[in-house]
Length: 238
Image (cartoon, rainbow, N blue to C red; front, side, top):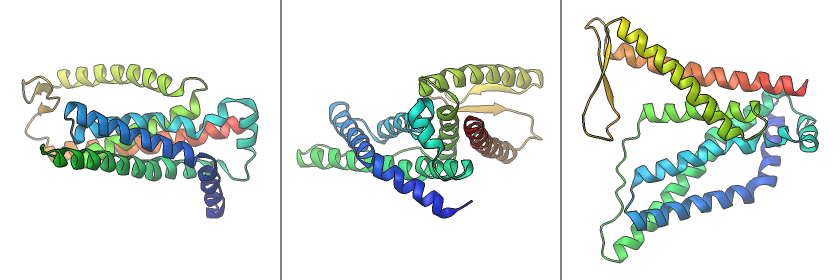
């Protein structure tokens, strides 16, 4: 893998797409700013909007694969499949995430400044995001990254549809396995909107062990979908 080729791919992307990215970041700032002023939204609203943008973004990274002339041009770029995947992984996982985070901060900061100048309470910056939430976000991004390579039309919608179907199947099977083994999912709080769940599991299964399984599963899922993206790009090139 040649780092120079990866650098050239990144340079080519920024030359072609910096205006589009700046426009999208500006749209996100405006949505957060006016949404906060209109509805008193908080950090959770900003994270939700940023997540939507992050789901859509991978579609742009491989859009040239799904039309003939740009496809030939993209596949003929002097870089290997792994270098193209790594370059786009850097764009999606670091660059765009950082841009979305900065846009959220700017939007909330402007809303906070306006509200305090008018004598109102500022914006609440409290959020429940943690390591689990960040890992889930990157797991979701890996799925949409693969979908942008695999599907030729309406890649984001196709990825959402297939993911929901697969998620439904696995949830059903997982719940059945838990039920058969006497492990029951019970609501942690009956209040509507509290989606946290706790396990009524046997005492010999520690919570630390379950957390370790959760992290291993997500890490494996991320590696799996990026590996599939590489293989799919290799197949397309062939």
